[in-house]
Length: 353
Ligand SMILES: *Cc1c(COP(=O)(O)O)cnc(C)c1O
Image 1 (cartoon, rainbow, N blue to C red):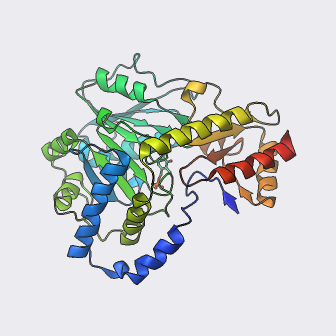
Image 2: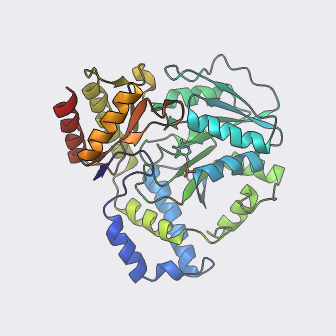
């Protein structure tokens, strides 16, 4: 069965061997305060920097999920409120989670075919943090590098947090243009779920130390203190950290991966354009995602396509949120091969063209 689910997504086939290696190397039972763990963690931080082009002065933390990052950010980096710009289910969920922690949280929804409305924003002085979703997995839109740059230039006094769950490790992100970036590994990293990566600018840590929030096991200041010795606050997912190390060691540079995915996404958009039973959900090419392609049709048609695909050993991603029943999604992640997309395309050509 081929899976194009955008998360949990296909894992790298090499993971099968890495699992055995992890067992044989005895890594699964190491204490997380041991030298061996510290070596693994330290080496992984170096490797992440190198393979994802994360600036030397940015901090990297291991947590359990992107959802956890939503909470860490609200707890540890805002006294009053964050402001959320969203056009889909994940961005909106993030705002809802933040609101439960800081009731003054505000946000604004923008259209799925529009760019993030940077120039029309009017944020209050007590807004401490701006939250955006770089790649909205629910509808297949993405925010361009230049847009993030405009936001950064317009609001230099505020922290910018970016949910990059379905783009980190697939897109060559410019980490320097925002403060907090986070993802979980079951999307573009090609790994099983259960590990989150959080990347923070120096001024993020400065701010966290000012606020000094320490009421949670994963308060940012505590994460910072533990990570000074390459350790975590709780017993971490050592297996996934090991797998992440293995996968990153054997991966191409992010620039190359980015180029490959952009090209493949363009090819997919061109491929799907002529079909008439269903259409591309996002009509504005400028905001289309390079890692998640969304297609839309009536509920009945979508249901038939997904079932037919399953009969042909292809699992398409279900729609999500507003588009749960009227769309399907296709992940274009680094772990997918050209051959898989050829099979996918022949399926659509033989049944729907
Ligand atoms: C998948 C996803 C999440 C949630 O990830 P978890 O690992 O389940 O916490 C959050 N944001 C986006 C954009 C996602 O795609």
